[in-house]
Amino acid sequence: MLEDSPTAVLTPWTLGRGRLPGKEEIKAITALTPNAFVSSPDATSRSRKRQVSVQAFLRANNPRVSSLSVPSGFVRLRKRGTQDWSVELFGSACRLGELVRRRRTATSA
Image 1: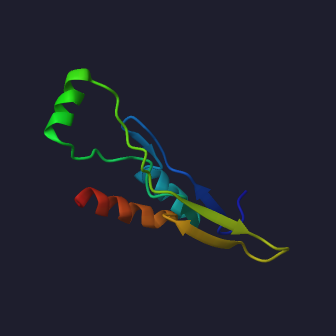
Image 2: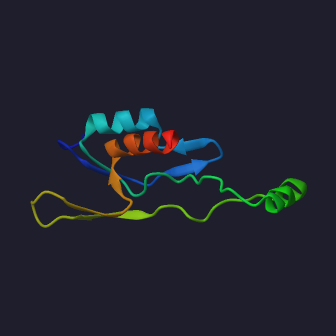
């Protein structure tokens, strides 16, 4: 059903401990095409180091805290007539295969 080496673009998703694309999804997609891209390396955020007084306040009041700083990027696809797709990556967008390496680097840091 697919043409040879189709172009695929994904946006990362996270909810609780679940995140997509996972390792298995990345393997499956990259097995079908070398032309797979993701708009941002991850939709997760890391907890920040905070002053002791702020940490105490958060523990005492138990608010839900999340970061608004998520690396952003986008993938631009253009096609004219019968030419191949032109792909441009901006910001933190990358090839899907590169996402695995970036996640490994982020977790080891």
